[in-house]
Amino acid sequence: MRFSKDEIREGAGLAALSYIFFVCIIVLIFSKNNKFVRFHARQALVVFIFEVFFWFLGWFIPIIGPLFSFIGSLIFFVYSLLGIFASLLGKAIRFPLITSLASKMVI
Image 1: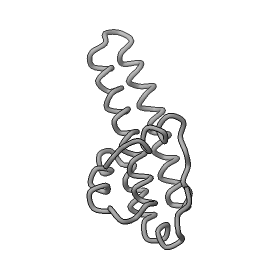
Image 2 (image 1 turned 180 degrees about the vertical axis):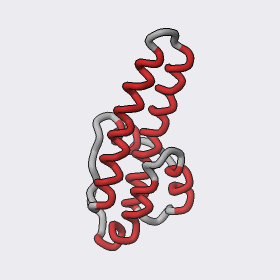
Image 3 (image 1 turned 120 degrees about the vertical axis):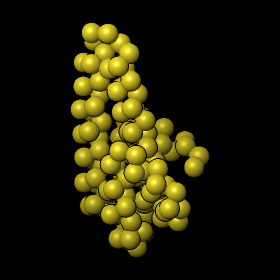
């Protein structure tokens, strides 16, 4: 996906902020015109949903649930860090599964 230099310059900060927990929802509401920000905010929303899912696994599955929760949280923390760095560098990094799910979202 291609973005204009103006979209990247204006939206890099918001795109990076969208990877911090539920901030992606706020960013999606207030940045409807910037495609670069929306790309990253959608990916961040999918990462957040998966992270919450793995947290629930930790609560409801005895014994191995906390292990799944820890591993899932670690993986999605790394995805969030990569997303933050990519957005600040003006890149549109594509994560396996996450980007395809994010592109199908109608928001």
